[in-house]
Amino acid sequence: MNIEDTELRRKAFLAPEAILRYLITDNDELETLVLCKSSEIQLVTSDFALYEAMGCIRDFDNFKLNKLVKLFEVIELTKDKAPKKILKEERVDELRKQALKEVEKNA
Image 1 (spheres, one colour):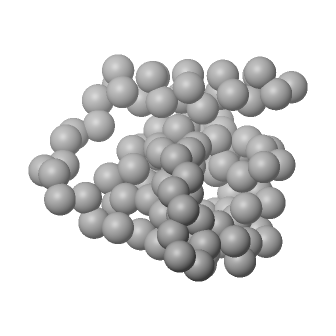
Image 2 (cartoon, one colour):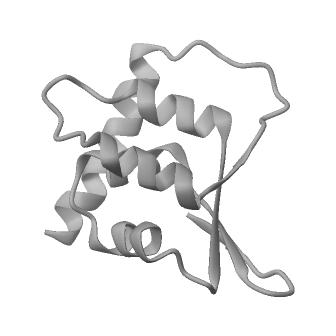
Image 3 (cartoon, one colour):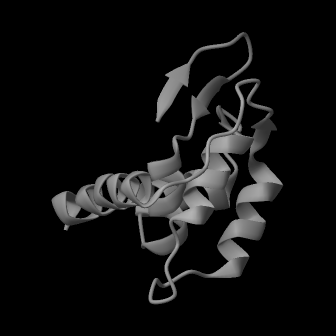
């Protein structure tokens, strides 16, 4: 998560692995940022980062649709200007490893 200061509030860019971690795990830090919609931090992500995160969800994951709905309520979604790449299995494995590594580290 990259945080950038602006005039009124900081912007935090959510990378695909952070979005995936929020969607399929119980991460208190991310859940608090999303559920409480901080007046100090604006959450931002790109359409491609969201696409990558959603493409990494597996049938066996603890994915709850209401978490995705809440994310859309609070996030500023930007359009990635770069051409979209096809999400390959290697990238899925890499993102899942990064997202779940953070969960194991904090456990």
